Length: 307
Image (cartoon, rainbow, N blue to C red):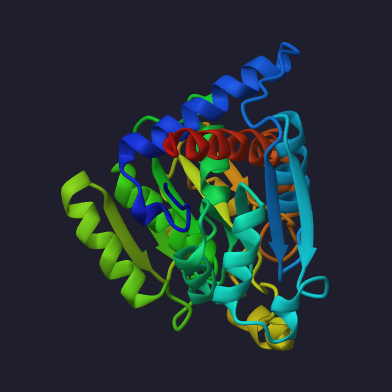
Protein backbone atom coordinates (compact mmCIF):
# COMPACT_ATOMS: atom_id res chain seq x y z
CA UNK A 1 0.00 0.00 0.00
CA UNK A 2 1.24 3.49 -0.86
CA UNK A 3 0.32 6.97 0.38
CA UNK A 4 0.67 10.15 -1.71
CA UNK A 5 1.96 12.78 0.70
CA UNK A 6 4.83 14.32 -1.28
CA UNK A 7 6.55 13.68 -4.62
CA UNK A 8 9.71 12.97 -2.63
CA UNK A 9 8.38 9.46 -1.97
CA UNK A 10 8.01 8.58 -5.68
CA UNK A 11 10.45 7.71 -8.43
CA UNK A 12 10.49 9.46 -11.79
CA UNK A 13 9.04 6.36 -13.37
CA UNK A 14 6.18 6.21 -10.88
CA UNK A 15 5.31 9.89 -11.37
CA UNK A 16 5.22 9.44 -15.14
CA UNK A 17 3.15 6.26 -14.74
CA UNK A 18 0.55 8.16 -12.70
CA UNK A 19 0.46 10.89 -15.38
CA UNK A 20 0.02 8.33 -18.16
CA UNK A 21 -2.77 6.63 -16.22
CA UNK A 22 -4.55 9.97 -15.88
CA UNK A 23 -4.11 10.80 -19.56
CA UNK A 24 -5.53 7.41 -20.55
CA UNK A 25 -8.57 7.89 -18.29
CA UNK A 26 -9.05 11.41 -19.68
CA UNK A 27 -8.96 10.13 -23.27
CA UNK A 28 -11.63 7.56 -22.46
CA UNK A 29 -13.78 10.15 -20.68
CA UNK A 30 -13.70 12.47 -23.70
CA UNK A 31 -14.87 9.49 -25.80
CA UNK A 32 -17.71 8.89 -23.30
CA UNK A 33 -16.05 5.70 -22.10
CA UNK A 34 -16.46 5.63 -18.34
CA UNK A 35 -13.77 3.68 -16.55
CA UNK A 36 -15.24 2.39 -13.27
CA UNK A 37 -12.11 0.97 -11.65
CA UNK A 38 -13.17 2.23 -8.23
CA UNK A 39 -16.74 0.97 -8.36
CA UNK A 40 -18.41 0.81 -4.93
CA UNK A 41 -15.37 2.34 -3.23
CA UNK A 42 -15.59 5.33 -0.89
CA UNK A 43 -13.21 8.30 -0.66
CA UNK A 44 -13.26 10.27 2.60
CA UNK A 45 -12.36 13.93 1.93
CA UNK A 46 -11.23 15.78 5.07
CA UNK A 47 -11.10 19.56 4.65
CA UNK A 48 -9.51 21.72 7.32
CA UNK A 49 -8.77 24.22 4.51
CA UNK A 50 -11.56 25.01 2.06
CA UNK A 51 -11.12 24.73 -1.72
CA UNK A 52 -13.03 24.95 -4.97
CA UNK A 53 -10.89 22.84 -7.29
CA UNK A 54 -9.82 20.21 -4.76
CA UNK A 55 -13.35 19.38 -3.65
CA UNK A 56 -14.95 19.40 -7.09
CA UNK A 57 -12.16 17.43 -8.78
CA UNK A 58 -11.96 14.67 -6.17
CA UNK A 59 -15.72 14.37 -5.72
CA UNK A 60 -16.48 14.36 -9.46
CA UNK A 61 -13.50 12.09 -10.13
CA UNK A 62 -14.58 9.48 -7.61
CA UNK A 63 -18.13 9.51 -9.03
CA UNK A 64 -16.84 9.04 -12.59
CA UNK A 65 -14.72 6.11 -11.43
CA UNK A 66 -17.83 4.43 -10.01
CA UNK A 67 -17.24 5.30 -6.37
CA UNK A 68 -18.54 7.77 -3.81
CA UNK A 69 -16.89 10.71 -2.01
CA UNK A 70 -17.73 11.95 1.48
CA UNK A 71 -17.09 15.64 2.30
CA UNK A 72 -15.94 16.03 5.91
CA UNK A 73 -15.00 19.43 7.29
CA UNK A 74 -13.43 19.83 10.72
CA UNK A 75 -16.84 21.11 11.85
CA UNK A 76 -18.46 17.82 10.86
CA UNK A 77 -16.15 15.33 12.60
CA UNK A 78 -14.57 14.98 16.03
CA UNK A 79 -11.11 15.71 14.61
CA UNK A 80 -11.96 19.40 14.91
CA UNK A 81 -13.16 18.96 18.49
CA UNK A 82 -10.22 17.32 20.19
CA UNK A 83 -10.17 13.68 19.06
CA UNK A 84 -6.59 12.47 18.51
CA UNK A 85 -5.57 12.27 14.85
CA UNK A 86 -4.54 8.63 15.24
CA UNK A 87 -8.01 7.68 16.50
CA UNK A 88 -9.77 9.48 13.64
CA UNK A 89 -7.40 7.80 11.18
CA UNK A 90 -8.09 4.33 12.50
CA UNK A 91 -11.86 4.85 12.45
CA UNK A 92 -12.21 6.47 9.02
CA UNK A 93 -9.76 4.07 7.35
CA UNK A 94 -11.75 1.12 8.67
CA UNK A 95 -14.86 2.39 6.88
CA UNK A 96 -13.51 3.97 3.68
CA UNK A 97 -11.22 2.80 0.87
CA UNK A 98 -9.12 5.94 0.49
CA UNK A 99 -8.67 9.27 2.29
CA UNK A 100 -7.84 12.73 0.92
CA UNK A 101 -6.83 15.44 3.40
CA UNK A 102 -6.44 19.19 2.85
CA UNK A 103 -4.98 20.74 5.97
CA UNK A 104 -2.39 23.08 7.49
CA UNK A 105 0.45 21.23 9.22
CA UNK A 106 2.17 18.55 7.14
CA UNK A 107 2.81 16.60 10.33
CA UNK A 108 -0.94 16.10 10.69
CA UNK A 109 -1.24 14.22 7.41
CA UNK A 110 1.90 12.21 8.16
CA UNK A 111 0.45 11.06 11.48
CA UNK A 112 -2.90 10.26 9.87
CA UNK A 113 -1.19 8.17 7.18
CA UNK A 114 0.87 6.31 9.79
CA UNK A 115 -2.30 5.03 11.45
CA UNK A 116 -4.41 4.64 8.30
CA UNK A 117 -5.24 1.21 6.87
CA UNK A 118 -5.91 2.70 3.43
CA UNK A 119 -4.05 5.08 1.05
CA UNK A 120 -3.93 8.73 2.13
CA UNK A 121 -3.64 11.54 -0.42
CA UNK A 122 -2.28 15.00 0.33
CA UNK A 123 -4.81 17.48 -1.07
CA UNK A 124 -2.61 20.32 0.26
CA UNK A 125 -0.62 21.14 3.37
CA UNK A 126 1.41 24.20 4.27
CA UNK A 127 4.50 22.32 3.06
CA UNK A 128 3.39 20.60 -0.17
CA UNK A 129 0.70 20.54 -2.86
CA UNK A 130 1.68 17.45 -4.88
CA UNK A 131 -1.67 16.77 -6.59
CA UNK A 132 -1.44 20.21 -8.22
CA UNK A 133 1.96 19.30 -9.64
CA UNK A 134 0.53 16.17 -11.24
CA UNK A 135 -2.01 18.37 -13.02
CA UNK A 136 0.65 20.92 -13.97
CA UNK A 137 2.99 18.38 -15.49
CA UNK A 138 0.13 16.58 -17.25
CA UNK A 139 -0.76 19.92 -18.85
CA UNK A 140 2.81 20.47 -20.05
CA UNK A 141 2.78 16.97 -21.59
CA UNK A 142 -0.48 17.68 -23.41
CA UNK A 143 0.89 20.96 -24.76
CA UNK A 144 4.15 19.34 -25.90
CA UNK A 145 6.20 21.30 -23.36
CA UNK A 146 7.70 18.47 -21.31
CA UNK A 147 11.06 18.31 -23.12
CA UNK A 148 13.98 20.58 -22.20
CA UNK A 149 11.98 22.40 -19.54
CA UNK A 150 13.46 25.58 -18.12
CA UNK A 151 10.93 26.56 -15.47
CA UNK A 152 10.79 29.85 -13.57
CA UNK A 153 8.81 30.08 -10.35
CA UNK A 154 8.20 33.68 -9.29
CA UNK A 155 6.69 34.62 -5.94
CA UNK A 156 6.52 33.21 -2.43
CA UNK A 157 8.60 30.21 -1.32
CA UNK A 158 5.48 28.32 -0.29
CA UNK A 159 3.98 24.83 -0.69
CA UNK A 160 3.73 25.26 -4.46
CA UNK A 161 7.38 26.25 -4.65
CA UNK A 162 8.37 23.22 -2.57
CA UNK A 163 6.37 20.96 -4.87
CA UNK A 164 7.94 22.41 -8.02
CA UNK A 165 11.39 22.03 -6.47
CA UNK A 166 10.66 18.36 -5.76
CA UNK A 167 9.20 17.73 -9.24
CA UNK A 168 12.26 19.28 -10.90
CA UNK A 169 14.57 17.20 -8.71
CA UNK A 170 12.74 13.98 -9.55
CA UNK A 171 12.30 14.55 -13.29
CA UNK A 172 15.66 16.23 -13.90
CA UNK A 173 14.82 19.61 -15.42
CA UNK A 174 16.00 23.16 -14.69
CA UNK A 175 14.04 25.24 -12.18
CA UNK A 176 14.76 28.81 -11.17
CA UNK A 177 13.00 30.11 -8.07
CA UNK A 178 12.80 33.89 -7.61
CA UNK A 179 11.50 35.17 -4.28
CA UNK A 180 11.97 38.36 -2.25
CA UNK A 181 14.70 38.10 0.39
CA UNK A 182 13.35 36.34 3.43
CA UNK A 183 10.66 34.47 1.49
CA UNK A 184 12.81 31.66 0.10
CA UNK A 185 11.72 27.99 0.15
CA UNK A 186 12.19 25.95 3.33
CA UNK A 187 15.88 25.13 3.71
CA UNK A 188 15.36 21.51 4.75
CA UNK A 189 13.08 20.77 1.81
CA UNK A 190 15.58 22.42 -0.53
CA UNK A 191 18.45 20.32 0.85
CA UNK A 192 16.46 17.12 0.25
CA UNK A 193 15.68 18.21 -3.30
CA UNK A 194 19.30 19.07 -4.07
CA UNK A 195 20.42 15.60 -3.00
CA UNK A 196 17.89 14.05 -5.38
CA UNK A 197 18.89 16.52 -8.12
CA UNK A 198 22.48 15.23 -8.09
CA UNK A 199 21.20 11.87 -9.28
CA UNK A 200 18.62 13.14 -11.79
CA UNK A 201 20.75 15.93 -13.28
CA UNK A 202 18.26 18.62 -12.30
CA UNK A 203 19.45 22.20 -11.99
CA UNK A 204 17.76 24.15 -9.17
CA UNK A 205 18.66 27.80 -8.66
CA UNK A 206 17.48 30.30 -6.05
CA UNK A 207 17.53 34.04 -6.76
CA UNK A 208 15.87 37.28 -5.74
CA UNK A 209 15.59 38.81 -9.22
CA UNK A 210 12.49 37.66 -11.15
CA UNK A 211 13.87 39.02 -14.43
CA UNK A 212 16.91 36.79 -14.08
CA UNK A 213 14.65 33.80 -13.47
CA UNK A 214 12.44 34.49 -16.50
CA UNK A 215 15.30 35.04 -18.95
CA UNK A 216 14.93 32.29 -21.57
CA UNK A 217 12.43 30.28 -19.48
CA UNK A 218 10.02 27.96 -21.31
CA UNK A 219 7.52 27.74 -18.43
CA UNK A 220 6.61 30.45 -15.93
CA UNK A 221 4.70 29.70 -12.73
CA UNK A 222 3.37 31.86 -9.95
CA UNK A 223 0.90 31.64 -7.08
CA UNK A 224 -0.93 33.96 -4.74
CA UNK A 225 1.29 36.06 -2.49
CA UNK A 226 -1.14 35.69 0.42
CA UNK A 227 -1.99 32.07 1.13
CA UNK A 228 -4.84 30.89 3.34
CA UNK A 229 -4.01 31.73 6.94
CA UNK A 230 -1.76 34.68 6.00
CA UNK A 231 -4.50 37.29 5.62
CA UNK A 232 -3.11 39.43 8.46
CA UNK A 233 0.18 39.73 6.55
CA UNK A 234 -1.44 40.98 3.33
CA UNK A 235 -0.42 44.64 3.64
CA UNK A 236 3.20 43.84 4.37
CA UNK A 237 3.38 41.14 1.70
CA UNK A 238 2.07 43.45 -1.03
CA UNK A 239 4.91 45.84 -0.25
CA UNK A 240 7.57 43.14 -0.17
CA UNK A 241 6.42 41.50 -3.41
CA UNK A 242 6.29 44.72 -5.41
CA UNK A 243 8.16 44.07 -8.65
CA UNK A 244 7.33 40.35 -8.68
CA UNK A 245 4.12 40.56 -10.73
CA UNK A 246 4.35 38.53 -13.95
CA UNK A 247 3.30 41.04 -16.61
CA UNK A 248 3.93 41.46 -20.34
CA UNK A 249 7.34 43.02 -19.74
CA UNK A 250 8.36 40.03 -17.64
CA UNK A 251 7.04 37.52 -20.16
CA UNK A 252 8.94 39.26 -22.96
CA UNK A 253 12.14 37.95 -21.35
CA UNK A 254 11.12 34.30 -21.75
CA UNK A 255 11.79 31.88 -24.59
CA UNK A 256 9.59 32.02 -27.68
CA UNK A 257 6.22 30.34 -27.09
CA UNK A 258 6.79 30.13 -23.33
CA UNK A 259 3.75 29.11 -21.29
CA UNK A 260 2.39 30.62 -18.09
CA UNK A 261 0.79 28.43 -15.41
CA UNK A 262 -1.24 29.35 -12.35
CA UNK A 263 -2.89 26.91 -9.92
CA UNK A 264 -5.73 29.40 -9.18
CA UNK A 265 -7.33 31.36 -7.71
CA UNK A 266 -5.46 34.16 -9.50
CA UNK A 267 -5.43 37.72 -8.23
CA UNK A 268 -4.97 40.00 -11.23
CA UNK A 269 -2.87 43.04 -10.56
CA UNK A 270 -0.92 41.27 -7.83
CA UNK A 271 1.04 38.13 -8.79
CA UNK A 272 -0.07 38.29 -12.47
CA UNK A 273 -1.37 40.99 -14.78
CA UNK A 274 -4.77 40.74 -16.43
CA UNK A 275 -3.20 40.68 -19.91
CA UNK A 276 -0.79 37.81 -19.15
CA UNK A 277 -3.53 35.78 -17.49
CA UNK A 278 -5.94 36.19 -20.39
CA UNK A 279 -3.26 35.56 -23.00
CA UNK A 280 -2.52 32.21 -21.34
CA UNK A 281 -6.03 31.44 -20.12
CA UNK A 282 -6.44 28.38 -22.35
CA UNK A 283 -3.54 26.50 -20.78
CA UNK A 284 -4.41 27.77 -17.29
CA UNK A 285 -7.91 26.33 -17.49
CA UNK A 286 -6.57 23.13 -19.08
CA UNK A 287 -4.36 22.97 -15.99
CA UNK A 288 -7.40 23.46 -13.73
CA UNK A 289 -9.39 20.74 -15.52
CA UNK A 290 -6.45 18.38 -15.30
CA UNK A 291 -6.79 18.32 -11.52
CA UNK A 292 -9.74 16.01 -12.23
CA UNK A 293 -7.88 13.72 -14.62
CA UNK A 294 -4.53 13.62 -12.81
CA UNK A 295 -6.21 12.79 -9.51
CA UNK A 296 -8.30 10.07 -11.10
CA UNK A 297 -5.07 8.62 -12.44
CA UNK A 298 -3.55 8.86 -8.97
CA UNK A 299 -6.47 7.17 -7.21
CA UNK A 300 -6.54 4.33 -9.74
CA UNK A 301 -2.74 3.93 -9.46
CA UNK A 302 -2.89 3.80 -5.65
CA UNK A 303 -5.73 1.27 -5.79
CA UNK A 304 -3.78 -0.97 -8.17
CA UNK A 305 -0.77 -0.91 -5.83
CA UNK A 306 -2.87 -2.49 -3.11
CA UNK A 307 -3.07 -5.64 -5.24
